[in-house]
Length: 264
Image 1 (cartoon, one colour):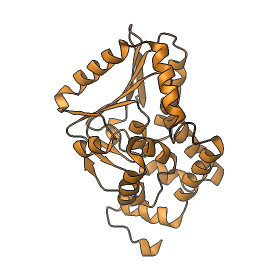
Image 2: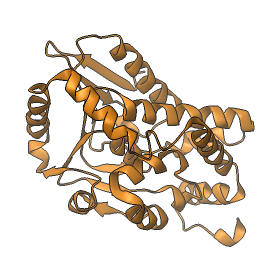
Image 3: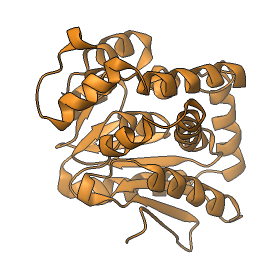
Image 4: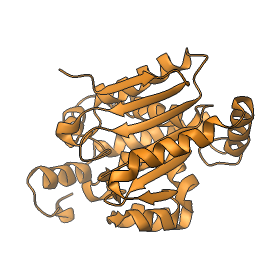
């Protein structure tokens, strides 16, 4: 079985972290979550680290949660469900608070938790074929643990639209609302990423870390959200997964039909 998360570090101190479940569009499960955490652990030991580039193998960047995995988690105890949600939150939040500049390169689908991942990155460059959606409500779930990062990137007003509708929107709309910074042709995505990395490497590493820390002090996902608040979001995220509404939503996905919310 291939490693769900790959990483390497070049001589310049540029790390490339690659989500590597292309057979399921890089949908996250326990293996991918813990792979991201392990990569953060290992990279955190590298004093030469200057920039982290985040990518997804295959046609799509990240398709949110693996709903088959979610269905397997749901029947477990409340504590086990909270443990899963806490690990998911930690993976996104550690990326969010990394004192090193992060650059996400997005192609194809970026759904659900994928939107939280890119919201946690400092610079996001999308290919012109990128497609986004905060999908959780479609399956009777909530995006609780990524709402703070989404509010930082696109603002409360846009979250109130796109997290409530679950609608899909393209790369240019994502740029307009602030989810991505730049849109380029798919063939130029790697080149655009390399250009951004060069721009970041030209700057003082201590100054970069200090500037990011100061910005985070004013963010929903930084100073404004304390541990108690995040614990509440984790509990909400986990508990929602075990409701009748989530059961119907996930069944509708598996059966490729519209959800019957009257049954929930």
